[in-house]
Image (cartoon, rainbow, N blue to C red; front, side, top):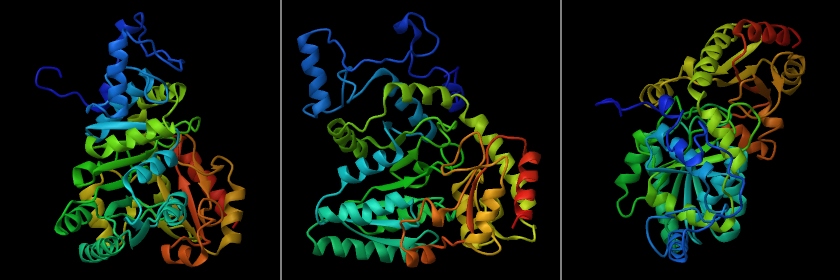
Length: 416
C-alpha cells in the first residue's frame, strides 16, 4: 500500500513476499538448492511437521523439506495468488501434475465429475480413463451451454453420484477451450451449481489461454483456477510448471497430497518463474496486440475458412460470455484453412518465422495441428463432436514484429 492506494500485481511482482535482508541483501531471491532445512530447535521441528502433516490446521509455519516447501516456491505462490485475488496458490512440476493432484485429492470412489468440453486431451483422458479405474465417473456439457443445459447435466451428475454412493465432487471447466477457443459461462455454471442445494461442489477452471491477465475466474464464481505456468506465466518456452490458485478450503487437501506425491515445482523452475512474472503483463499485452493485427489480415484471406479468435466472435451467446468474463481476446486462436489435413500441413510446413511446435504463450509464434498432434488420442467421433477438424490450425502469436508475422502467414497460405 502507498497511502490508501493498493499496489497492482504488475508492481508487486518486483519484490512481493521477499525480504533482501534475509538473503545477504540480494536484490532478487537466490536459488535455494537444498533438499532439507535445519530447524531452530526440536520443538520448532515438531511444530513444523504438525503443520505439514495436518495435525495442526494452518499449514507449515516453517521450512521442512523440499518435497513440501521451499523459499523460491513460497515466494512464487504468494505472487501467483495476487493475479487472481486468490486466498493462496500452489505450484507444481507441470500443468498436468497440478490437474492430476487436484483431481485425485478431491475425488473418491463413486464420485462424479461434471466437465465442459472440449478439454485439453491429457485432462480429458485422465478423467475418462485413469480416474475410471478408481470408480470415478463423469458427465460433460458443451462449452457454450446455457444455464438450463448446464443445470440439467449437473442434476444428472448429482443423481448418478447418489446412486453410486458418492457425491458430485467437482465441476471442471476449461475456458477458452483447447483448441477451439469456445468460452464457458462461469457465472451460469456457478448459479446452476448453487441452485442444486446441499454441499456445493467446487468449480475449478483451466485459465491457461487467458490467464493471468485477460480473465479472472474467481470473480465470476470459480473456486480454483488452474494454470499451465509453462505458457504465459513462464513465457519463454524454457520451463515446465503448473499452478493452482483459489480458496484455502479446497487447496488444503491438494497441498497434503502434493506433499505425499512430490509434485511440487523445483526451486530452479520457481526462480525462473519469478523472473518471468516481472514481465508477464508486458509480454501478454504485446502478443495480444499482435494477434489482433494478424487476425485482421487473416479474416478476409481467400484461403481461410474461418477464425476462432475471441476478438472476432460472431455467435451472440459467446459474445455475451466474452463481454462479462474477459478483458482481452488473448493471443491464441484457431485458424481454419480451406481444405483439410493436406492443406493444413502445407501451410504449417511453409512457415518461416512461426515455429511448428505445440504449446502457447511464449515470446515466439507457434503453430500446430491439434487433430494430428495434441488431440491425436481423442477418438475421431469425439473430435468431430467438439469441432476439432482436420483443417484447424492452432496459432499462438508471440512478440515479434506483427508485419513480419503477417508476411510469414501470407507466404505460407500461398503454398496451400
